[in-house]
Length: 293
Image (cartoon, rainbow, N blue to C red; front, top):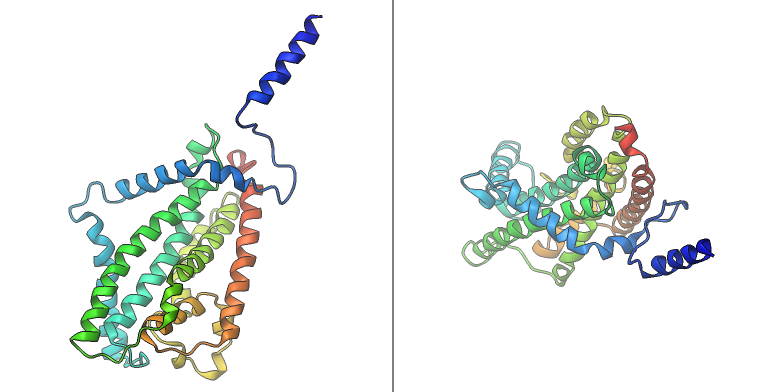
């Protein structure tokens, strides 16, 4: 009689629980709904990252503007003045600042997501919450940085158009700017998830990542337009999925660029494939990463 009562109480309590934590048994069991339920935690992580990033700095968030601006001026001197690399008629400052801004956003999402397990192992090993909230929050934090930098780009754009009479033309494609942000964020974030899943076992991939990012920038139209790529190397625009969103941004906001629709389709397909595999590897690896690390 006692056992029957205990079973009844157990069933009743189980029905009253808000959430039941179980092991992921299926390959595609990503528990994405749990991530939505913990959206408040994502907001907290974003706020934490924003406060901690420049908490003890003098200039604070102004560094978000100085870093890409100084880099753009350096590119103007090296690639614009010395190497005489063309920009499809786009003013140097607008061309290089946009490329630097978008590439920095991509690499920031990539490197921060790649360090998810190693940087959060103490937290992940003590308390439960959907692990995907951490990389999502870091990408959200970098969107804030991108938004601040984009405001400076708008100021430079207005100055170049109204005061320097620069031959730039705003296209209706500019309305797709949020789509470009998601596009690049998914590319960087998904690659970061894949790397984070592999670096729990192979730490030397972190060194390869740093080296690879430096090389990848020169294979991406950051300091040169796609029109400067010789025809025999045009296949690079298909292999590198970051070529399409950067060149599409220039077409949307400057009215200059050379981008085939097939390049856009290829990049989007690669982005979805990387996102799919990134989520699978990440959720599979989160089960036993504490034992490996």
